[in-house]
Amino acid sequence: MSGIKLSICIPTYNREAYLRNALTYCENDYKFAFPFEIVICDNASTDGTQQVVEEFIARGQPIRYYKRETNAGAAANVTSALRLGEGEYLIYLADDDMLIADAVADTIRYLDNNQEVTCAHAPWFLYDEVAKTDITKFYNVEEDRKFPHGSFGDVFQYICEGHIFPEIAIYRSSALRSAWIPREFCFYPFPFLAHFLDQGAVSFLQRPFYRSIVNSAIARDRPQEGTNDVMTSWDRYRGGLEYFLYMGVKRGAMTLTPETRLKYDEMC
Image (cartoon, rainbow, N blue to C red):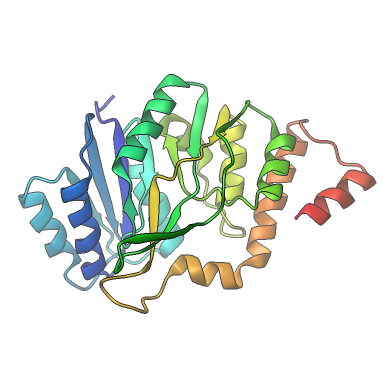
């Protein structure tokens, strides 16, 4: 083991001003009682990204920096950032978002105390960086829930009824190594969740540990990959849910009859 408890994994491409902002939050606000690292995977940026990173390394930030020779696309860069993390736990951080450090530490404590849990999800805040206020949560969790290993039917019902997007989570790295297989044909968090559930328990916690910046202090109308996705990716979302169902059926945890097929179809 590397001795690192948490890897904060940041994929980036040609967004030096945003990355500087994100790393400033890391430097000023992320004080943890355990060793952590920041892994930056640069998708062959042509701007000043590398210089920004080198500045923060020189100031003592625990950064490991990787730069691709050619741009491999956004999805591959996210995968690489997570795979390069050496910590016991991994968290994805967009280069223009921020973490809530004390809530991250609480979630790590939860995972330490629940060794069977492969990943802990939580809703995230949409955040106005100019007014420095949380606007709303992207979805809501009424109470902390832990679903046992292989409980595909219960989890499927839970995510459909709660309109839950299992996108922001802290992952146990030992489970992620085999769970993350890039699947370009669908929205990855659903198949990802299925593979984590196939290895152990999964949890959905009430307390957010992530802020998605919707009103940026850097630029008012910046392009946001996630927002574009939501407007155009309905087929890919459906594909992700169908992949989750496929895994549940394949593992014998869900049965497909003409009646249940119709029910699941409607839920999707």
